[in-house]
Image (cartoon, rainbow, N blue to C red):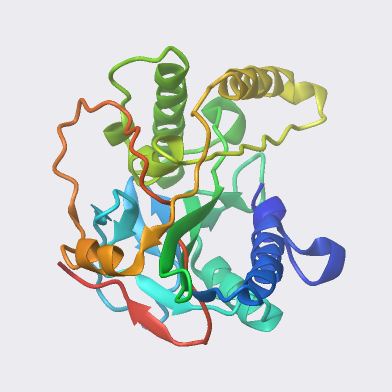
Length: 295
């Protein structure tokens, strides 16, 4: 799964993340001819034992990573490293991937010599402006590499690895519960039961659009895991999130709204999925780094 998302090297071995960013760059160039100006930034985090870790933090500084919601209800992470990115600069994107891979939590198990012990979320933050139309659009693209569910009797996980496996399985179980609740149109969706689902909540509600890919093992030994994965995929595929819509904002109105800033989500734990018509997220060029502001 990690190889599928991150890839290695160039050409046919590039992963979905660098390929997706490259496609964003192609569309960016086309829209720039229509007067749009883009600001794009990326962040890259992992969720390890239900704790957020910044994969682009190269100086080892202490961080207070909390999940916040901005004025539009989109996800922000306090104090996370934010990198300005030019999507058509392959070297820059590959460097970002290399830095993140270096900090990713992995370990050997009986089933995988390099088993991911965390979920990772690469996020493209995008803002597009068109002065002639006096319009602005915000959007986010989350590209996730989920650690696989783990049968401890097969992986041989013990001690630290066992704790990791329990947390991985718990968060994936919560993800299943979220999709079950959405599928049954329940008034309560347990987004807040794990960091993973809470972080991705905007992708599962409102104007979000979600695509899931599942990985199967071809071996007969993995029959039951493969069958369980296929059933999970079929259930997810039956979920209806509603039509994803684009909403252009007036530039002045957006500036006024964003001045209110983000805040830690204070909504009650038993909240229903949002169905607002707020826009998604977006962002552009350069190569510098910054921190997401503390609030």
